Length: 346
Image (cartoon, rainbow, N blue to C red; front, top):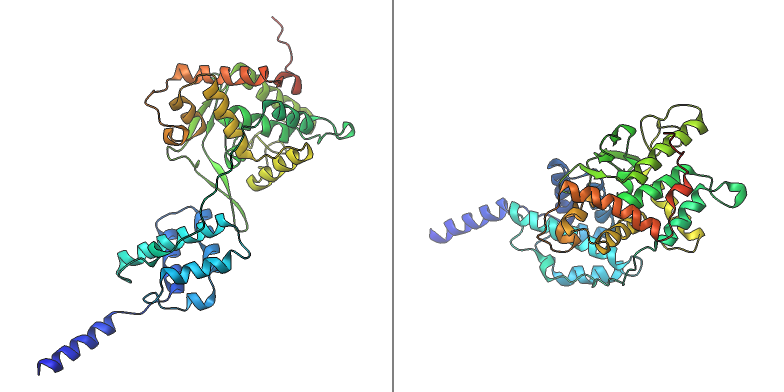
């Protein structure tokens, strides 16, 4: 009788334990991420990871998958994909299995026994201010003189340099974000590339929106840019600050990044929008601005900017803006010459 009862209990346990496949785990995890409010771009990147996994692995029960199975899979992926992509794949799989453990779908995470490719970080040099000047000059010069004839692109490079804003944050700037009274701009939003276009989201930094104080030169350049764009299109610019139709249509964040990279390539400069963040951070730190003030300006954490216990202040933020623009000018970047500021009549 006891043997009969144990047999019945064993069958009941087996019935309760539903065998799930890797494909089912990934699908459930991605839906879970969407439900808890992960960014759309993040969810879409997880969906891309799921597409990289072979159908054979997706149809395999998670109970029998091992770290060795995934290591072999990484070897196959490595024939067509880069190490960074495989590391991203590993990270998503690891997170998906962590969630599966929480749900009670599997006893242990097999990804702890898998080994993604190592991370190699080449030494990066800060973008030279002389190169920044050349890029702005090429972007703003007329096409008949060998330039791009694109004031919007020139202003994007200037703003990227003096604010350190990310490409999506630059594309998300609106004219109402500029406060002339305080010589500052407010980074409230960013355009995030996604499937079928781009969508608006909050800034990437964990602290959310931030205010970036501008120096007198930076504020004057924005005022001059507003005037030039208005003259060029014969109407008052409103709405999106970086726009080729006076603010109606924003730049696409991805297209802005590509345009800046192409601009650099035309001058023999390897550059991305992130290069300007590194350049801004380098110049701020070199000028003695404390880490906390620099971090808040760039929308970073102090851990990213280097560990610091020095607290920033509004006075330091104003000093940082003026110092940065002064250092850029001293490195061969005559900003006012690129977008000439009219002399004020006293």
